[in-house]
Image 1 (tube, helix red, strand yellow):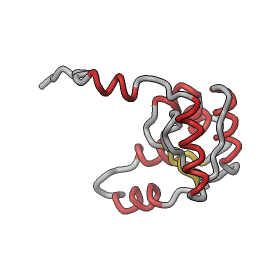
Image 2 (cartoon, one colour):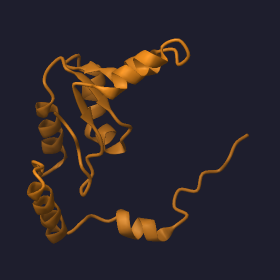
Image 3 (tube, one colour):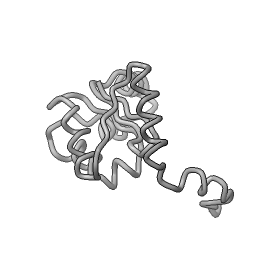
Length: 128
């Protein structure tokens, strides 16, 4: 059965999340994160963001990245999975048999050496 996906059924979501945060909001968010012991790294542009993220991940470390258009657009997913610099877990997990290797899939996903999440402005990324 094929179902049509409605991309933006609620325009309030586009207004709230589809616009870039202003500098005041970004600085307030950064200050709040830092007040809670979180180191904030702010990139000036997309190539700088890519460099920051990839430089934080130790060479040869097992890396699991969540599905993220931002990671894809910045080329981070490609770099993690294709460069040979890292031990990419996502392709390995996808190739495993869900029935016979379920325990190993859970183990790999639960404790990677590094994990990237969303990198969009106003979102948080977790690295070692």
